[in-house]
Length: 185
Image 1 (spheres, rainbow, N blue to C red):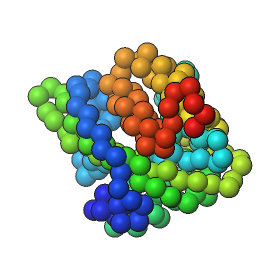
Image 2: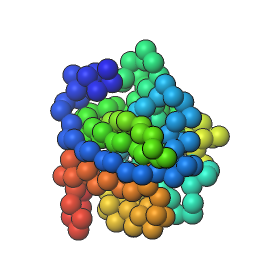
Image 3: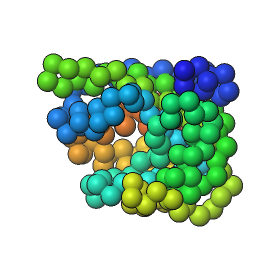
């Protein structure tokens, strides 16, 4: 349902398939709400800047684009706008459905099919101020180059499957935006 609404409003996404074993802790995180098997990741830009968030439990140096879930029965645009406001304090306008990631997380003989919908949104707002201060430890402006470079390397250095998944998402979404390493995106 989310996929169809996003396609109708914001175009055809690129497709990414990902399959990997996850740790027990990652499995618990992915399955804590059995009714939810998706997330929406938001590449929010203001000119050449890209909104990034840190959750309180993230290791030092870990930042990623904001996102979350669309609630059952919630209009997909309203969910995107709500998540952006909660995690960054920014008023956004969704502009393009960049990427549909179809993932399979595996642990202990179990499998979970997961979908991540990556949406590009823009904002004229300058100041980032998360509204959900329990879930979000900080928000700041970064760049495409940072997400595709030093932050990419930091995520991979953790050795965690979920961060490898995020790197694959970020790489594919940045490519859909036309970003290539070494070129201003």
